[in-house]
Amino acid sequence: MKEFIDTLKESELLKSLIAILIAILVYNVFKIIIRMFIKTGKNSFERKRRNTVVKLCENIFKYIILIVAILYILNTYGIDTKSLVAGIGIAGVVLGLALQDLLKDLISGLSIILDNYFVIGDVVEYDGFTGEVIEFGLKSTKIRAYSGETLSLANRNIDKIRNLSQKSSNIFITVPTAYEVSEEKVKKALNDAIKEIIKSTDADDQSEYLGIDEFASSSINYIIKIHCPQDKRIPTKRASLSIIKRVYDEQKIKIPYNQLEVHNAK
Image 1 (cartoon, helix red, strand yellow):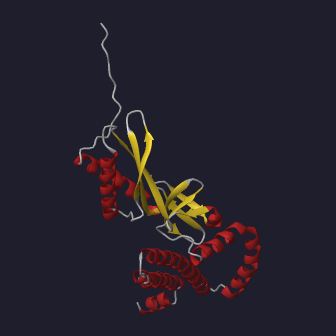
Image 2 (image 1 turned 135 degrees about the vertical axis):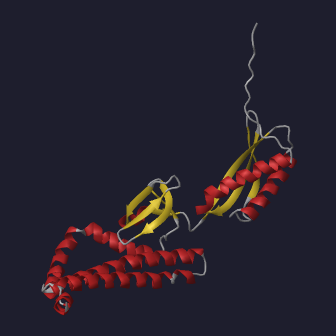
Image 3 (image 1 turned 120 degrees about the vertical axis):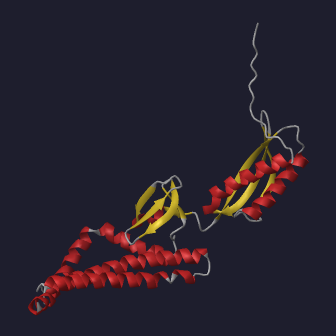
């Protein structure tokens, strides 16, 4: 039994398993420590930026741990890792020429972080595709649209990405109203609605009533402006429409709809 244990201690397989377990343990401890870094953000943008940095650090550290573990395992089997590392250095030059796009992705990934171009949670647009950044790595970025579609985008396309989160936006809402309702009553109702929209949503006090937009065939179309963060446009618009409908109902203001008259000829 003792001989078996001594043999097991000297076994390359056991050393390899120990190296793998230590690598997994070190990586998980690193993740726990680095994730504590997120909680120190002063605001939502800072926390999102820190979260992006954490994801990037995790990816880098994962590959470093993997390389170190592989080199140690190879060394336990008697392979000269020093010569291997030197050979990798020479091969790296050749691969660098062959994999220029990959290097561009890596450099662009670092630029995104250093220049605060976008962070996880930001809403961005690329070639007509708009969505939220859900994953970020040194090579690529994943964007998920509101419909659920996911786009994986190489970081070298950074110059074609528009960040929609780090600025505000105007939502213009047209409210059709019956002709028989006076403009004064409509103005008061819409201003009441705007006050509630500002109070209940992400809209701010730059939101305002703009007046009559159009004399339509069956309604007067009034228009209001709702000012809110770009990434809050859709939920803010939905909430605003709900508030406007409720205010109109409470103040007995009619929203007209098309009606069809059918005459039964004799």
